[in-house]
Amino acid sequence: MTTATEDTTELGANALSSELVEWIGDAANGTVISSDRRPGGGRREAWVVEVRGADGVVRPLFLRYDRLDPEEKGDDFTLHREAAFFRALGGTAVPVPDVVGVHPTDQAILSELVPGQAWFSRLHDESQRVSVASDFMRILAEMHRVDPHRLELPDQDPDADLRVLVHREIDTWEKIYRDSGIIDPLIDLGLDWVRSHVPDVDGPVVIVQGDTGPGNFLYENGKVTAVLDLELGHLGDPHDDLAWVSVRAVQEPFTNLMERFGDYARAAGTDIDLDRVRYYRVLAELRIVILGHRKRAEPDLLGEVGNSLVYGLLHRRLFLEALADVVGVEIVEVDPVPATPNERDWLYDAALEQIRQIIVPRSEDPFVIQRSKGLARILKYLREAASVSAPIEQRNLDDLEAVLEYRPSSVSVGTIKLVKRYLVGTVPLETAVGVLLRQVAGETQALRPAMGVLADRHFDSIKR
Image 1 (cartoon, rainbow, N blue to C red):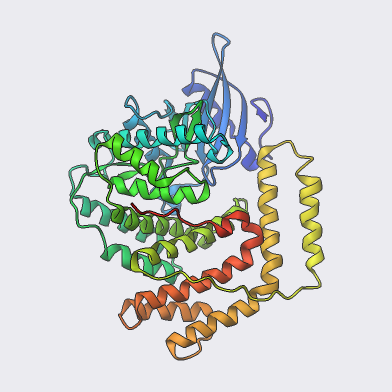
Image 2: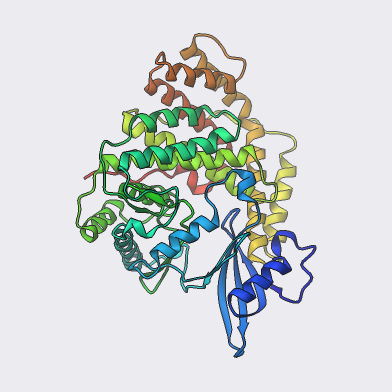
């Protein structure tokens, strides 16, 4: 924990500037006496700060902070924009933290600290799990009842046709991808499919949280205490949020998904179109893949690299599985290639054991512990990749040669050609998806030691 009197010059990402600390004190009408960075949040840092008021009472607050200049990064999803969603939902039946202040220039939101736990996976009592999950689905229905005109953002039109809004959302994400300047054939394929299959309905138009579900709300005593993380919010189809619940339920299983959809339907007083949920599940996963692509294009060496490896691959696979589901491609299990031991494996083992038995146990800082575990994931991947990458590459080249009728110079070059042929109609979508699924199976084998249980997680079934 950093106190307000400490010199933060050399603390880097583990400290707040004196200017920001002064702003926090002004916004909260007091003096900052401590600040503690919490694990998670990715680029958007999470801090608990304590402010002492003139009456001597200490008030705990929550700070979300992004050090990067979003305009330089071409980032539409700023914390200033997210604050507009919190304010639109404030005073409604949707519990959100009260905004204390929004920094006029820096990307920082100061809000009340709401009690509750974020990790749904840490809740083990099944009756409590169902109670919290059901309460969240009720609240999601309430969010979709909020008048979309309350959201005052110039790029969001509550009176537009829903199909227009969906196309605008796709445009937003395509621009993020194109601005990277780096080709990813998986994204090219995905953009083509989602754009040509937008559901042909004109409404209703609602406030969509985006990235909603377990992990992005707080709970306590069987109830949801606050909805968090509205950075991907927009106006759109309520089925978009239901798809996000399905996506996040892979990372943190969320009780019986179809029963939770039933909770939502009863609270919203409407039926759920499962085909629309399947469409938006593809779109949700595509957006995650694009975010991961941007991280690879502009790597943050001090970011959560280990987690990014794991979740980046998980969602590339889930994107393909979601697409396979809607186009009717059977997902066939791919046999792992044999691993070749390496004489340097012991060095990886030594580094991993020192992280596990020395560094993590002797650290009291949750942020350091989290990053240490991320480093362990990187090492596990590098060790396994050294053992299996060569035969996996040959298998991928064999697959591409069978479709393209020539052997490409590399897997990346061949995959780009494969998707280009799909886009011009000379390779069926089902064939392209099948080849890409086999590629991601090989990537999963190399990353499996770092992925743990996530290597075998799949979507819950969406069936009546």
